[in-house]
Image 1 (cartoon, each protein chain N blue to C red):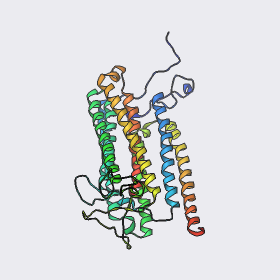
Image 2: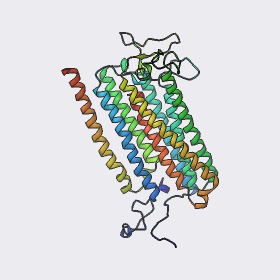
Image 3: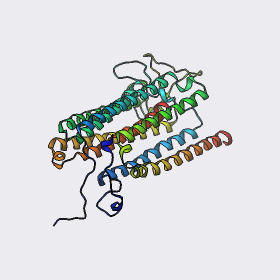
Image 4: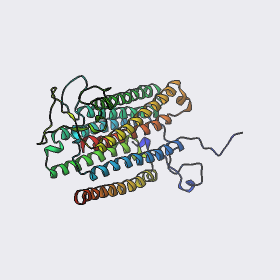
Length: 124
Length: 256
């Protein structure tokens, strides 16, 4: 008996030779960019270790690393995982809930951690 | 990459069944949902690490000098080995995306080549991490098996990841010119380090296994007969996710 309630299909699983060339070019460009960003991170990491710089410089370096990391992550998710090419509703169904949760989690954990540190330093 | 873009869905039939409103297949959508949940697990672990670090009142190990060794040399090379590992993982992610691209053109040989290289890259990464862990656990005297209550490495298991420094904060070098680990670093640091890099390493390991299984099926021609290589794409999503997690682990453990 043939069942008609199971839909077996796949979408957008093919492209032409010409599209392939364009896609490969983009892939190599992104590869170069990711490598470059990693190299910059390593350079800064070797040149400016934590104990050799002032607190202000370190704070700036921290932001610098964080921004570079998010750029790298963005390229991996949007280009390598093709999320940037999916429908808008799928893109936001994945990014929005996760972004919301993780931002809250980061905020609450770091705030609490800082306060615990403050308490141990001052009241113990 | 317009070729990957979704194909048009008639809005009037969108919720009437038979057609995915997301314009992706069931398997791919479920892979995305799994990856979101897995990302929450890693996000939770890394924010917990952030909590511990902010709460800790003593000196935290300097991240960029956590691992300063290179295989076959006595060189003092902070970050270089980890940078190589990162590069290998990024490249294996690239070969994976090239395998997916070849699959879209029904190029079986191309898929085999790129997917094979991805497996090799993943295996090298896992091996590199094994060497890194070995070096950590062996400690300054280099004797991996000399631990436990009787051995002089007994505290190295969890205490070893801080660089030994003199009063001015300058690292004390051993006779090979290496920085030495073994100052009393916070145990918490080592616990988070081994747990999170270990959890990630296990993901890489399982990713390699999945890729090998998919590779065997590609070679058998199963996907070619099916008419599309979507399974490579799904395995690829998982593999890219593993690379994505490493980007964050690398930043938080080796840079910040």
